[in-house]
Length: 348
Image 1 (tube, rainbow, N blue to C red):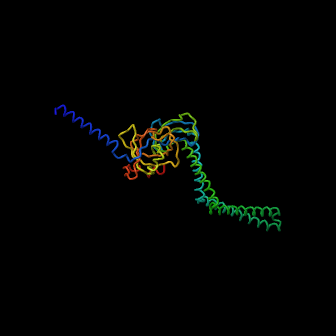
Image 2: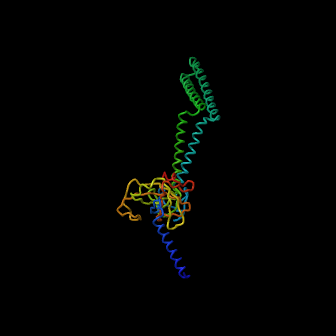
Image 3: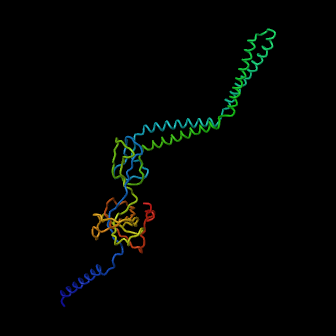
């Protein structure tokens, strides 16, 4: 056999081996036990709005900017609410001081003053009573008139009443305010404190804070616009939960279970596998949407399934096409980062 014939025989052998390997790859190899589905990345959006009405003074974030929970997003004109808060705080301080004064009772100086007034009134009373007795003794002898005696008796009676009034004022100063008055003052203080809390909340409502982590998609309103609780200011795409919305044919419904491990791939990052799990399976069927790629007829019924995904690198975007492999029940669950597993999707 010539050299040329030997080369031809080797080439024919290689072709035969390649054909046999191809036949085994397509026909003899085991079928993929995973269920392959096609869908799109889906996320939740929120439309934060002010809990108050007024003119917007500033929008502090731009489209595409990532925000964190509690971050200041926008502000309203707060001059009225700031003045109302200052007024409420002043009234609250006054009510607090009034209550403190009533609880402390009379000062020693006030008690001493009331006692001195009482003693002076007592002295005047005793003096007028003595004059009345003298005039009464002089009337029979003509040393005083009846009118003078009656005037002295009236003055003594008035002095006695003044003494009794001064004595009661001294008793009240010693005893201090009534319990009912203290309770009423405490109620006024509590009402003033509540008014401060309300005014402070109304003032805080002029600041729009991010309810959750996410990315700003749209600035719906701008500075100068009139805001209200019914008018969203921004559109924010949430970071979590993140899932792929796909549809499973009725014939494959038995191969999907809640909590099943899954792998997700995208055309944008074909070499990266996103680990996930089946977190939702629709209880009702629907006709196949036009955007779903399946081998079944378009009139076939399908069930929506959500495969929640762990995306620590923040690569997935809303509407991104994705391929999902739902692993069989016997397959080991993929390793997922802490805090990113089926238990975390239960409440979503």
